[in-house]
Image (cartoon, rainbow, N blue to C red; front, side, top):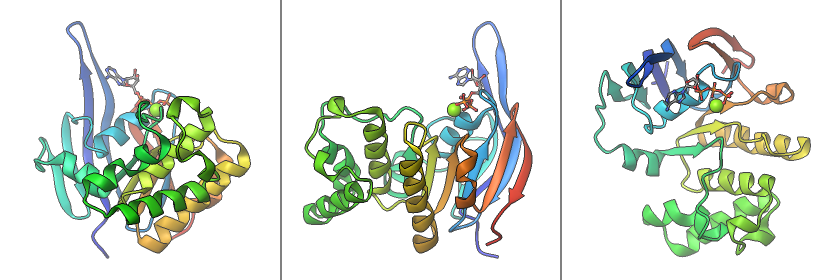
Length: 234
Ligand SMILES: Nc1ncnc2c1ncn2[C@@H]1O[C@H](COP(=O)(O)OP(=O)(O)OP(=O)(O)O)[C@@H](O)[C@H]1O
Ligand SMILES: [Mg+2]
């Protein structure tokens, strides 16, 4: 068996305030292989976004262990010191709210990370425009973010998360603002990337129509992983 792309062992997260504390992730363990695309489902407030932001090295867990492509990044504390570099070079993150930079245009938003990673201008502009074309918004490349519709912004966020050729993609309801056809074309693109580039992908979604695009489904309820269903064995 190959080294898993994502390995989570007995992960916990507790949010503490002065008055109280809230256990949100209660000992979750799972693995995702390279090239596997997995659907995360569960009720609102069950901990899906919390789990994703910990995997994305944005939020610090309380305890447990996380490894990405065989490298331990967290073991009861951050092991990897430069989590920003990891995020910039290896991870693609699509947030529930799109988090685009309002004072940059579409193309500048998408090419920000590739520019930081030292990719040549010709390459990153070409890549950005390929992605925009695939997502059906190539005519918007010079638009400011504020002048886009919700669905268009979401597609820009998707393009941005793919622009640095990430090894792992974490997507939090990436198709929520899209109509059915667009949602399906985004899922087709994500599945293609998973298979062709051996990228591990987690997608949080409530949309059961998208089920055929996934290799596995993980159900999270009240901070526990309650069910794992393999739909397409790798
Ligand atoms: N920064 C925080 N401080 C305190 N509590 C938090 C914080 N972030 C999340 N929570 C709590 O953790 C729980 C899980 O939240 P989370 O956002 O992970 O849920 P979710 O499964 O993504 O829900 P949804 O489907 O609505 O997006 C919720 O009860 C939420 O209020
Ligand atoms: Mg959420």
